[in-house]
Structures are given as C-alpha cells and as structure tokens.
Image (cartoon, rainbow, N blue to C red; front, side, top):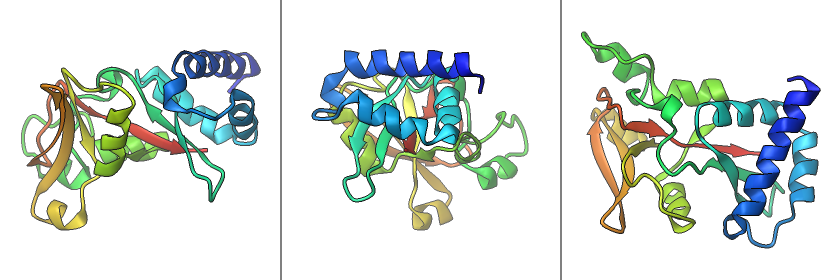
Length: 181
C-alpha cells in the first residue's frame, strides 16, 4: 500500500471512529492508530473491507491481548460481498448456477473471520444492521456437517438467526468480517 493510500485510509477510519463513539467507548483513536501503524497487513485487510462496502470501524477491545476489534459496520451487508454461498464444499456441491465464490473463502482471502452468532448479536447492540439484507455467520461444525449454515438479520426491531442450505446464495446476503489488530 502506498503512503498516500495508507494516509487516506487512516483519515477515513479516524473520521468514522469519531462519528460513532458509541461503538468504542473509552478508547482513543491515537491508541488504535498506533496499533495499526505496527500492523501493515491489517491496513491491507481494512482496505479490502472498505473497498467491498464494509465501512469497518472499531467495535471492541480485547483486554488480554490488547487487540482492537474492527468489524464491517455498513448499514446493510457489504455490497461487494453478496451473492456467495457459505463455503467451498457448498460451492462444489452446486451443479448449476454457481455463485462467484463462497463467504468463508472470500473472508479468508481478505484476512477476516466471519462473525459468530454471539458477535453478530453484539454488533446489533451497537446499531441497526441488515434491516434489508442478511449476513452469513460462522456455523458450528455439527450443523455444517448436516448441510446447513447460519445467517442473521434484523427485522421488526429484533435480531434473527436462521438456517439455510449452505449452497444457497442470494443477491441480498453477504457476510460481515471481523479483524483483530
């Protein structure tokens, strides 16, 4: 990443951090920026999150490791990551009308992890997300072994977690990533 691109991204992240203080109470931008300065790979990941429509922001801090948690905070599931089935096995199982990829592979390529159900519900406490879309979430292995996968959304003022066949894909379903820096 070129120096000018890095500075532009950092300025954007700082503005978003300042606009949404309720997402990261009691944390200072200077501490986050210092952490980012020591992690160039994280900046590339944050750029990938941003360029695919994720609008990443700090949503927490892990006291034991000192890591800041960045998550996609776009109102709807990131536009550049929709229309994907859940994982490679689901993609390979489709005989026709294959989507362009899978959520788990795209997340891994970006350097993020899918949100767990608990993380997704915690994110929804910080705002109203996925009121018109839905997002794949990390699925426990026992459920995935049965062919299913989990996704979440917010409807009627409540957060719902549902199941679907892992090979399904929809224009309004993407995924939100979590990055630890």
